[in-house]
Image (cartoon, rainbow, N blue to C red; front, top):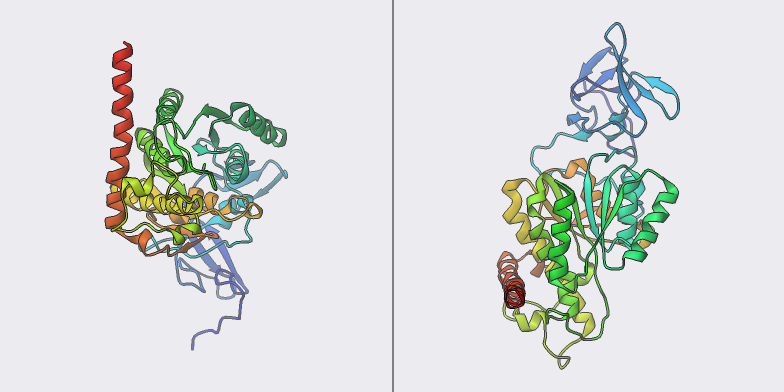
Length: 387
């Protein structure tokens, strides 16, 4: 007769008398002290787990004279034979999108990163000097990641970096100027980044504007559309050589995308970027730009899937959440291979029907590349004349 498992609030909670351990190669196994037996599958979920990645901050793996592996927590001056990464073990997945929700709308970004060491990783965060962009950059930097602040106001950005250094003096933060209202600035940013960094592990397209009155950028496009979508798309394509298998691109969208009025019948350059204020409404311009974010992420995920570059879009939540969804999508091990998805409150959600339309995403891609190319060709002509 099968044993009856006691009730539990958590599927992952072990029954009484069971213990979770890990082999040297990272495979998790379970010990039943009552029967003195072991098994590879979790006694409740029936799934296998593995531990991977670097040890948490301050931990070191050691081997005793008799060959036993143990772990030293230098911060608390303690030793243990249990791998500290067991707390963050992930289930083996049958397919890429096989993952369960671990966090929600009450989770803070630093909670998502608890115990994680991001040393050696490089991230770019646009709009990192304030708001959720700052919280994103701060959370990554405090966990060892080298963070490049892609911002327009260098003085304000340096002040933001100094605030993080007040918390931890040895954080690795850099700033490269980026003005999303000028495609030339985007190109210069990418050139500077490539000169200084050989790889890019995390790209967070966070910067955006909201509620602006009608205006045109230096490039001749409506400002909300260019800043929120077009320049970020150009930036991503320019940084592609630095992205590699396992790199993650996080496109910050919004639930406002559900109120956009773009469709296969209405999508055009004029609808995306009106040339006058006659039919302009700032709220709809924002909604449409947020739909563009998701459609861009959908098409990019399709195009880069074989390269192993993960692309997901998110609704960022509020300041209290402190960028938890952005951080989750940028770092969660269980999202390896999971691409082309939309997240809200650290949970996969279904976006609007328009946001799931591959044909609409393809048409937007073609229009956007055409608009980018028009500016590039114009600038090349100007340079040729000046020379």
